Length: 158
Ligand SMILES: [Fe+2]
Image (cartoon, rainbow, N blue to C red; front, top):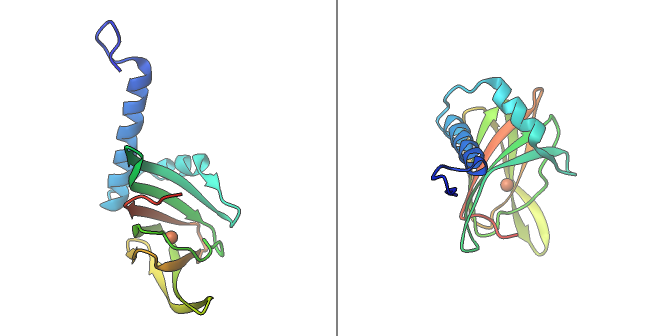
């Protein structure tokens, strides 16, 4: 917003600073640029606790005319905490383990039953991909809290 004095108003400056900060965090996590550990600790304090036992925080949730374009979230999974089996609808998911390690489980559905298809351990620095409508589950393996960055393209429709 431009005020009558021609400068940005305080709200816009705050919004811009917040956006820049989010882009910096996202770039650091994607490209493995070292981040001050306090940055992730601070973000964890702002995260929402899910009843399943993990925490999540939206870095970005970008819509254009009501159409979800893409999302970026950070997840915190303590040892044993799992997301539960889920898909991402029509979104492609690219996730990177930022800290510690997780178990990724992939499933298929047969006659109304969810059947485990494969599982693997994914360590910090590694990516995983989940295709549209693919059912998966992530679980923190510990001992430290696992941190996962998740990108969704296009964004999910809730
Ligand atoms: Fe997922």
